[in-house]
Amino acid sequence: MQDLIPYLAALHGIAATLWIGGMFFAYVAMRPAAVAELEPPLRLKLFQGAFRRFFMWVWLFIAVLLLTGYSGLFARFGGFSADYLAWMHNIGLLMCVIFVFLFFALYLPFSKAVDAGDLPKAAGLIGKIRWTVLVNLLLGVVITFVGIAGPYL
Image (cartoon, rainbow, N blue to C red; front, side):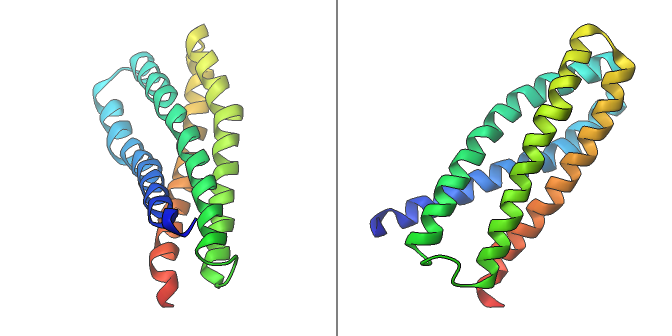
């Protein structure tokens, strides 16, 4: 298992970077551009398609993060040997729970509303999705800080 630690750590970092980077892109680049350039019906279809594709990847990222996170936690660190590891663990689990909520309670009803042409309902849900993504993005920034700075604090 010791031989796998560098690969597990790399996969963990890649999955985290892609998930957090995807949220950053969606929040600070795609959404403002879509609002500026597209009428609401097209904008909602764009978000529906983009989220469908991105969220399928997020499920994979979560699986990789949990697998590599727990493997590394016990193989590399021998468990919760430092406070920052517990912080990363708790923030990471919170991010996963928030994503599950976002997917099932917000995205799936949003997608159904878009398909049904119920634009007011879809618009209301996209606003909730936006705030939920912001919360997870901020948690992603915090967990990145903790993961990088934690060993030195």
